[in-house]
Length: 118
Image (tube, rainbow, N blue to C red):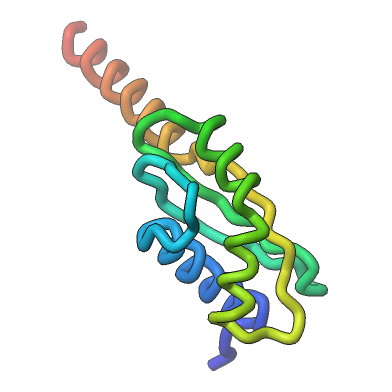
């Protein structure tokens, strides 16, 4: 059985670390609502880690702005905790896939309802 690639293992570590930093309140001044770090993708050369997040309160722009403003602090904590030779630069992206899933389910429900009415 083939194991995970190093980038996959690192992506999972970064996902857990960023999520913990946000939840714990370790990053002073970072005031976001209920944020979930949904996934992280690390580039093959370990230069970048694309961090995808989801929010429940609809404050996408504000959350992204705050995460970008506190990127340096988050990376400093990660560097201390993960002890990597090369720490990827974090980039934050909205993960709106849950909204798409909900919209598709809503449309399918409407189609089912219309089918029952005929």
